[in-house]
Length: 163
Image (tube, rainbow, N blue to C red; front, side):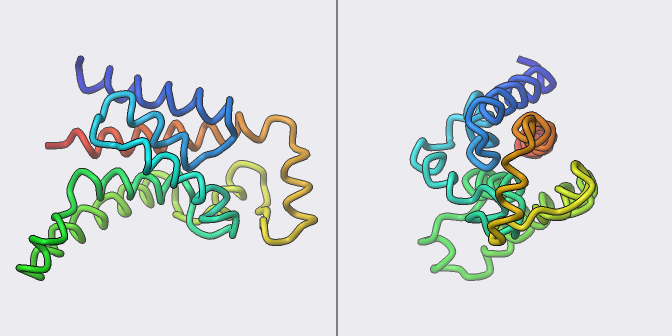
């Protein structure tokens, strides 16, 4: 497969998962797992807790946090190596900051409510019951969020393929 075919495959699978499940965080990892076999099912299952801005708290975007998980799975130094040589954490930091900067450049923010503003013209704060109820009344919110999921998955897949 070419690099573009891999990116397209991951993005397609992520988009499908988001439209089907409406869980942005998990959808990114489902998409990435279509090609990247280092992503375990356990991390996908756990990642569901990161949707809605990290635990439905309207914090960091679930697509961003799950992109970071994938970056960490591929690049972070094993703990025993880091404990033996703490300077090796710099490798982890270089990779997650690289992904953060790429995400910020493309999306303009890493925060779920700010991405909402871009999509819906306003933010929805999930810890506010009225906001959450109003958000879930938007009939195609899963499809609109699928655009974000697809874009984030494309960014992450390309980043994981850089070397």
